[in-house]
Length: 262
Ligand SMILES: Nc1ncnc2c1ncn2[C@@H]1O[C@H](COP(=O)(O)OP(=O)(O)OP(=O)(O)O)[C@@H](O)[C@H]1O
Ligand SMILES: [Mg+2]
Image (cartoon, rainbow, N blue to C red; front, side, top):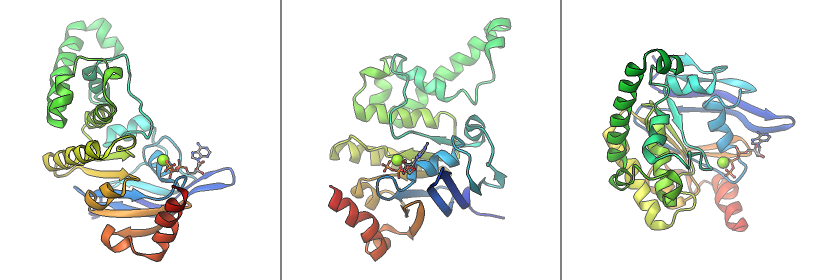
């Protein structure tokens, strides 16, 4: 029996001649927070896109528990238990905060359009339950966000938009939560609050595993249990941040190059 909740074997993603992900092996344990770092263009988001079913891997395999995910459509991958946020915001800006979370539950709701037409009372009852559940979820993720649940998403501050994206991803009740640069655009204070939110979510759901792509080294040093470094699509290091940060390959690939870019 495998003890990993999510596992990649030889994952490869080619775009024409470009190898964006090159034979990457990884595994994620239940309850673990795994950080993913690497220079711009290293292939981090592509890895998420392959795992979440947006891209079809050119080679290699991804397993969620014992289930092979290759070839599954993104909505099925969500239904099986993987939820994610995107590097760029994908909220429905005109909809309320609460409605955005309800949309995140769509894979769990049973009523479809036909039910709404043929069995409107049942569909309405399910929607009311969903609204109640969404409200509880918001309160658990952030009381500040919960207080703003009837506001349109476009009126939220940047940090709250990020929080809402996380709440919406959690609404599908995932086993694995993948966050793509959740702290981007945040100042230190908001980043600290974000770390606390993620720790709280993790404490409330001990079995939830989190993969987090990040550039903020303070967050990377403090939050993840383990960090994986990607460079030119290849995994070049995997371990505790304190151990890998001083590795020459990591210094050269990530810290050195970014420092000279900055
Ligand atoms: N749909 C696509 N078609 C062609 N090339 C792509 C596509 N998506 C990503 N790439 C290329 O794959 C490489 C990896 O991109 P990716 O977005 O995964 O990097 P990243 O590590 O997330 O970078 P960043 O830190 O800037 O977000 C880049 O060279 C990018 O241009
Ligand atoms: Mg990216």
